[in-house]
Image (cartoon, rainbow, N blue to C red; front, side, top):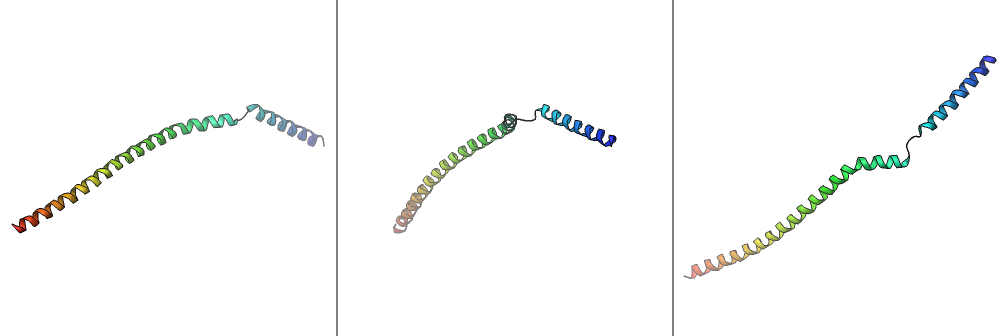
Length: 93
């Protein structure tokens, strides 16, 4: 009986020491977690910003190319009309 009593007391003291030891560690706070997440995502956010700027730049270039294409298509149509007119004039001569 005495052996069981001392074993129970030792176990209880060990548990109490473990509880105090774990609470003394402090653990992580939400601010620590937020800071770590922000530090980890900062490079990714800068890469995303750079990629978005690159996409916007390429979209602007695409718009410019589409405008030039439309102008060239119009000019092509005018030149084909001129060629047709010149061929008709040639046939009459």
